[in-house]
Image 1 (cartoon, one colour):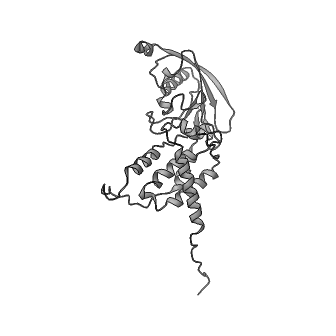
Image 2: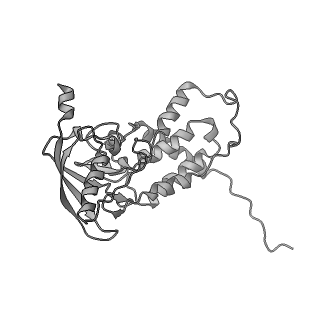
Image 3: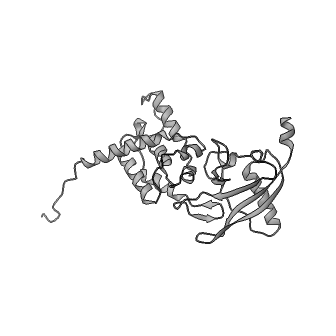
Length: 270
């Protein structure tokens, strides 16, 4: 019975946000998508629709994609009002047509947040995330050949927790899901995965202060504490990391107040 259901084709109507470019007016445009395989991915379906538009001499729908395996975070779509679609723990590219009913109207929008301006149609500029990561800088741990596995002792609890944070793919779903467009979950994951490990301790205070301040400067909003972010995250990163980030930021701010200022030299002394 299940195989019979999966073999039945599905037809949907796509209600897609079309916008010619930044600062251009946009609107929803409807496109029929007929005889789709239920095992087709959402992005494969958009490929089919774009092929049909191209044959008709119409402008194809612009959308971002790369790995199509839920690894890179490039495919950032709001599907029926939900970042990445109706399922938990998957990216847009891992959403399948069988998730929708035959004849359903499916609304597709870009991630909407002021720090993620629309480039064209469903493509947004998420370079703000790159700027936050760049503000964190590098670690001073040796980056040459692989160190001895036993050279640095790390408990399994810390290693697992750091790996949980490091799973963040920077897709921006947390920002799209938050009514304040907060990037707290993203920043918390990026700060925590290094802050938990011994290799990240030297720059720990500098890193958290720089990344949080950059996040604020770029116009991301404050945390709502309603946890839409972790619910929308395709890697199911816990909002508990936000608490860790807050603690690290407060501690770093306090310690920075008592750091000795560099000695002043008299430039005019002969």
